[in-house]
Amino acid sequence: MAEDHGPQIKDDEQYEALREQGESKEKAARIANTDRSTAGERGGKAGSYEDWTVDDLRERASELDIEGRSDMTKDELIDALRNH
Image (tube, rainbow, N blue to C red; front, side):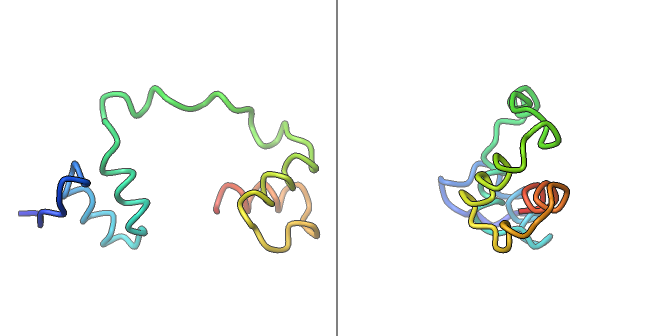
């Protein structure tokens, strides 16, 4: 039986499984609190990073405080953004 993590966590079992996999508390909570019936319907509206310019990729990397972005190639920026 999953431990009760309080009213802020909707799916305690999923939260615990994600934490055991090494996910942060914040990420585990976001995933555990997502309505599964609509989760797949959202997103997909932004263009692929491959379609972005290097300047746009660097700007997004700056927003996320990715270090070394000014020296990265387009492929490195895309990888850094996807794995942030």
